[in-house]
Length: 339
Image (cartoon, rainbow, N blue to C red; front, side):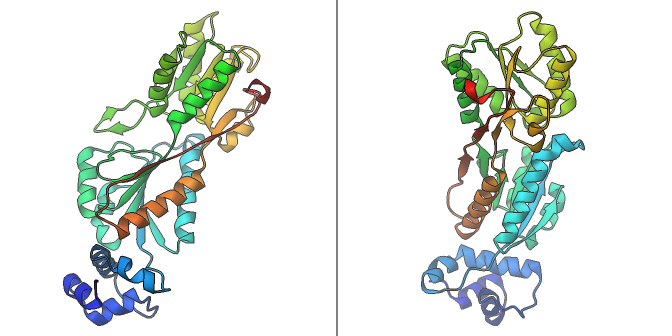
């Protein structure tokens, strides 16, 4: 059983300081790096595992960092990640912890001594070397919505594979045979553009379900402008053989696609139906309102906080990767009666 004396010896601080911190002495004044060092040693020695069963006292809440790397300035493009960031900050606050936001990995590495762990949102143009270095200085991390290095960090993500499978099932059940997919490029890691999980799932499940006509239109970022360009490409390449239905990877892309369709006189859902993903606020106000899969950002955030706290307390455990199911919200772009 870890003792105050053992923690003091390994951390290099006095038993009095260690005792006051671990007993939540509100009058104790120490630097964030000192606080972090003592708590890290306490976790490594299993202090909380040994004491929490026999104590009503709650473990000290860690100081956490939020690594927020999301590109783009357009509000519609950033809306999903803005809500996700706010949801994480809210969950951290409710957990009794404090959070500091970083947009640069180097800055977080430089301040790593002040934190016990971090939550990552977005990974715009990061490299594996940067993530490896971050792990060396701050090994306890959970990425939300993406999973850039599963061998080093935990993650919590929406189950986009199941989302695509469910959307295809609903469309084929409703009688649609020609189903297209419109999406953007995935994570940029090591300056290499990765395929997006939604695109991969669409390719896989259309093949498994024997859907013969399943054209893909995938390019560029997840923003309205690119959605508009992709919508025009769909119209040019389809001619008079427009797919009967589309799964669109995000509401932001859907807004641009609808603009292109409206300009060309293509009426949704008369001429083709649309199922989108994210269920952002804009989905309710475009014409027609979008049927869209809701990604529960509060659940993603809560699971991330819980996972990070568990990782901090049990640093030797294997990495964990969780997925959270989505749920469809029916609107006029794919009416509920078609389900």
